[in-house]
Length: 226
Length: 74
Image (tube, rainbow over all chains, first blue to last red; front, top):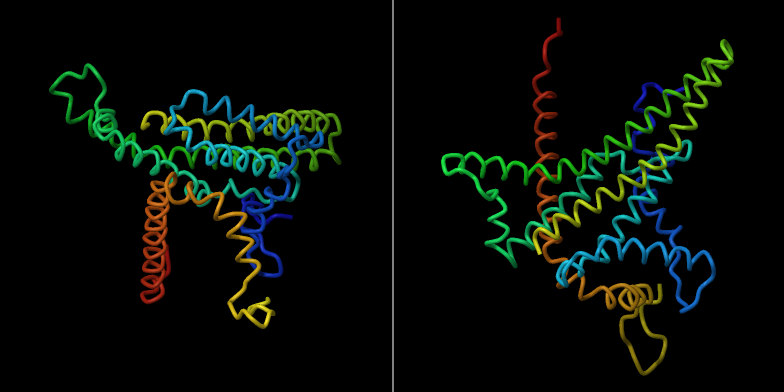
């Protein structure tokens, strides 16, 4: 039995050694690296999915933005597979850790901001003041826009952490409810287990959507700066 | 790990794993790591700085708590 509700989210250990890094690297074993021009069915499905995601994401970027294709495709693949693997019982999801999500969000966001400052300095500084602002409001609005810029990586990280953690916690709670009710009130237990099934389907969707939203926002920040 | 070449006429440092890493990872990814991701490296430096600051503050506060134990809370 868990000591508290957040015990499943603690960093895992194998024989007292931290196992976080092997767990983070595990999804790479599941992703095939096809070497032939025509591959088997599984590799072709994976290639088609990757090509579809890449096209959807990078279609609206210019040439400079499209140099980030590899980074963004890796990001969405890693986040989606990590989130989906975390739905298995007794598994550890690295994306429930705020440290991990901040470590993904801060370099990418800072990279996009620096791309903008380096190649389009005037344009990226002009983003700090919306068009049509009345003159007396300019200092306050520049301060507000700067704060909203600086909060972007924190929002990215916290959004992913909170969504995945909340979903896992809810599944835990409802699972415990089903277990507790199964001995006393079978009909309520069946109702709760139906709820659990629906929640699991929702969590699968949330896992994919959150990965997509994370990558889409980084792509949006990049597009604003290139 | 085979460190030195086994042929008699050459004596150079060999490291098959490093050579394989350079051939399969570094050479294909070199334009990305050196040109495209320059700003991301700077972002990683910023993140490392933030991590260092947080860790140092945590260490400082733990040392402060250890050196001056608080009286019993009411």
